[in-house]
Image (tube, rainbow, N blue to C red):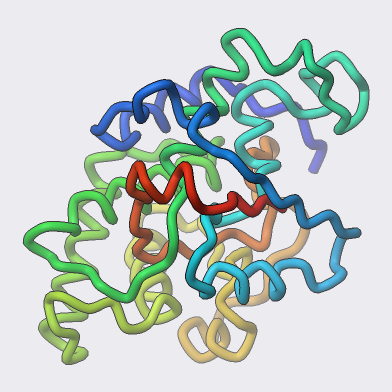
Length: 248
């Protein structure tokens, strides 16, 4: 399959429909951050495991994934930045691309939590899941209303059939396996083996499905292995100015 640049604008418009309803903090997200820690590593060097450990530590602000996805969606990746590399200059810190990036990161920053009060947090979690799926499958004809309904359906199934309490999120692998199984009834090209769910778990949930080969689609916004979204608590204004932001 020949890869072509992702059509960023239509994907971005779909993603923007599921941004956090609250506005940026006073002065903007970037202006409130005082300290940034960059974890720089080579590909397949264990940085994902390291970052997952950092996400579980208190006192840090993190994203759910690497920043590359959001640079690409903002038009600041190597293909669109005009630098022919991952290097970004001071000139890229202004303008529409930087504003896009600020808003996209604001939607993702926070810390993982196992709390999911269905009466209070479910809508935010559903938005987060749908937004991420739209990034992962940009070439699929995904109806966002159906995606929302499927996420709610899976959460209800977990409470009804798997003993989940309505204020807790117990198992991200189980949640995503059930969601992907539901999605594949209508979208068979959505392949669960592109997700970071563990090969043993994937084989147990999808025993008759062969492992995926090649890229997931002609357009790449997020690179596999795809992120499995868990509940994420947004930072308070005090945490934004006090805690370091860790990027990889």
